[in-house]
Structures are given as structure tokens and as C-alpha cells.
Image (cartoon, rainbow over all chains, first blue to last red):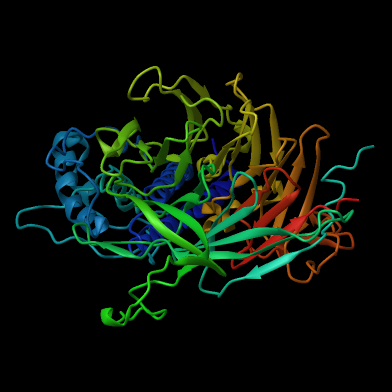
Length: 179
Length: 441
């Protein structure tokens, strides 16, 4: 049972996690323009921080919304994905891994949605509509989205709708696999 | 009690060698005798300094390091296949032990290692039969006598020539090179692989460590540094971004993926934060000269490990613990990614590493004493004794102390080197190289 004080602390942690997430994402994007190409070590460390921040953000959001109902199971983001055979991880990659990442997002999302959590992908959860202030994505997150192929739909990769970290969770894996 | 280097780092002669602003020093290395000091910079240049001892008979002899040779080691390149620019920045320089009159060193950027020969020329031939002194050919009919050309003294000229180029062996960015004690082979390490080379052979190298996962999404750690054991030619270590060190024995198998020893200290759960993983990443690993210990540097500390004990280091030195509460800001300004190096003194009794605000730290192992010193122009007049500095972590700031918030995080000392035999140290700030030495009294 959370008290008002607990809620405050949660809010602080939540804000901190969001801030770190936002800083990390901008660093990730900035590193694309770095001379010498993407640095694997740096990208790995950035993704680790983002993951921690996302997990904290998750758990503190969950704690601060005690009445949101039973939450659907969160998908593990960093296991081997058996649904992406076409993205062979071959040798050092190209020009703009993030661009590549962006185009791959829809495919992976689609597949994940299809194979994993059908029962959780109710129409309401598919929507990316923002629900209230605490779950709104920071507005300085880059808004670029990949072009969808005709017939493709966007699915929330994570079952929490409207969460900014669905963008980040995808970035985590794509960044590393792009090497 | 005996005067130790910590007690009195008396600057006998401080030499400040400054470079043009554009050239950030990226590596510093003494050769095996300490007579030569090489620096590499971001522009791909190597500058070598030579020690000149003024007068050995004086009770306090002064050594000067003067420019000996300068050459362009690496140029920027473009990888057309990947549309990537390859930086010319020199990541590491390692000297080969001297075998003849010439000196040899290995220098590397992100992708290519080069073996350079540095040789002296102080004589030139004169008195050719067929040529004039300026090189023009003589009219053969004008030659009436035959003579033997003689070698006459000339001003010393130091020439650097690339003898070998080792390229196309690294997919990822090279972070380390290390010459084997057998003087025939050396290793080069990138984020995921370590290759073994023969110094004579450039078109082939053997891969001895490969930690690349089949699925890159499973990647959890990268190689951050690697070094050969100074005495045992079969032994090497490599450190990881997870704070572990693996010791490998090349006699066990051709591919050293399975380590012989794994050095790891369990994390203190009370220190856990968003940035725990970043600060546990090891930025440098160095064997002691006697080969019994190794030292690792992570963001906040220096650890000394006994090669016989894997579960924890034998000594841990806090470099700048006061930064632990500032990790978030250091993450935002990118300083948390800084890769500090560390070094041993000649007899392995003292270890040294850099910090911010142009501070560097020395830890004397047996006495457990440490000192913080500053490399700056104001403090570095010749014959001036360096004054110990102190950072005030909290509470009331004493006179002469510096508060954490006043530290200049743009002034960082990442590269330091210690003369293998004498108490002479080279400390690199962003654009300047400082050389300090102990006053022999």
C-alpha cells in the first residue's frame, strides 16, 4: 500500500528515469554523427543505462498507479529473438544503423505482436494514445518514425500502451544488433 | 624514515612541452630504457622526446626531454564499403626492446597498426666520382681520377620510416596493442576480438580471442584492454566492460575463448545505481614489472590484483570517490565515458593515474599513502616543488582545498607514464605534456 510520501518518491524516481532515458536517446542519436563511426563499447554502455532507466521507470510507474489493474506480462527485450531471422547479424554495419533500425522496427513489432501476446493486444492497448501526464512521452524525444509499408500496422512492442519506452526498448536492441 | 616518492615529489626540472591546440594527446609511452618518450595525438602524429642528462656528476642531476623526432604515423582514411571515416587518432604506442642501433615502435589507430623504425643519421657520404655534391651528374669525359667517397659528419638527422603495416584484421575499433616478451609476436585487441601477429608478417594474423556472440543482440560485454604478461610469453590478460579480467594461456588451445582465470570482484549492492555498469567498466589493465600483479582502472578506482587470487583485488585505491554522487551530471556531460589509464613505477611500489582538474594521483602501496598533484603551468616552474592538492568532498572547505563543484571537468589527465628506472613521470593534459622528476638530494 503506497502512501502519499511513497508516491512522491516514486514520482522523483520516475522523473529521474525519464530524464536519463531522454538524455540517453539523444546521445544515441548524436553518436551516429560521430567521426570514426559508431563505437560499440559506448553504444553498449548507453543501452545498459537506458535499460536500467526503463526498468526503473516501469516499476515506479507501476507503483504510482496502483489501480491500473493487473498488468500484462512485460516482454523481455534482450533475449534472442527467434522472430527476426531475416535480420542476420553480419559484419559491421552500415552507414546509419539507426535508420536501419527505424525501418526494421515495424517488421519486428509486427512479428512480436503476432507471435507473442495476441490476447493482450486488445484494440485499446494497441493505441499509442497518451494517457495522462505521467505516462506521456517527453516531448523532446525525436518524433521521426519509419515509413510503413502498405498493409503494415504499428503494434506496441510492449504491452503498456502510450509508453515512451517502447521507442527506447526497440532502440536498445537495434543499436547493438546493427553492429 | 626513508624518503619516498610520495613524500617528496620535488620537481627538479619541469618541462612543459606544449602542442598546437588542435592536437590532443592520446597516448604516452616511455621506451624500455626510459631514454625515449613517445606521444601520439589525435591528428595521427607521433612525437618522440629524448632524455638528455645534463651532468651526471652533479648531486641533483637534471634530465631534459627534448624533441627527437616527429612524424605523421596515420592519416584519416575512408572505408568506402561501410561509408565510415577512420580516425587517424593514435590510440596506443608500444616500443619494441632495442636490438640494434635503430629504435622500433608500434603505433595504432582504430584499424591499422604500423611498425616504425626510428634511426639516426649523423654522417653522409661525400666525394662521389660520377656526381657533383649537389647531385648533378658529371660529364664522364671530365673525370680523370678515381677516388673513394668518404663519410663526413653532419648534423644529426632522425628518420622515421614505416617498416610494416598491419591492416584489415579488425572489424571493430582497436583499443590495445601489446608486444610479447618473445619479441617476435604482438597482440592487437578490438571490442570483440584479439589477434596475434608476427612482427615480420603483415598479411596474416591469428585470432586468439573472440567474444562476439552469434546474435549481436545477446552482446553484454566488450573487450576494453589487453596485455601480454611481461615475462611469460604464453600468458595474456584482457579486461571487459563488465569489470572482469580474464587471463588466458595460449598453450591450452589455439583459441583462448576459455579463460584460465577470471578475476572479478562482486559488486557492492549498496552502491547500485543507473550507472553501476558504466563505472565498473575497466578502462586500462597493466601488469606489474615483476609480473606478479596486475592493475586495473575503472571510473572511480584503481585495483591491484594478485595473479593467484581471482575473487577480489588485493588493493583498492579510490581515485575520486567524491564523484560517486555526481554520476548523473557526469553522464550528461559525457565525462563518465572517459577512459583513464594507469601505470606502475619501475619497482612496482607506486601506482599512478589521472583525474579531473588536471589532477593526478599517486598511491604508494606498502605505506598506503597517496597524494594528489596538479599539472598546470602556474605550478610548474623549474625547480618548483609540487604542492599536494586536496579536494573537499563536503562540509566546510579548508583553505587551499578545492570543492568538488569547482573542479574543471574539461581538464582531464587520461594518460600518464612512469620512467622504467627513474623517478621521472610524464603526465599529459589535453594539449600539454608535463615531465616531472624527483629531486635527488
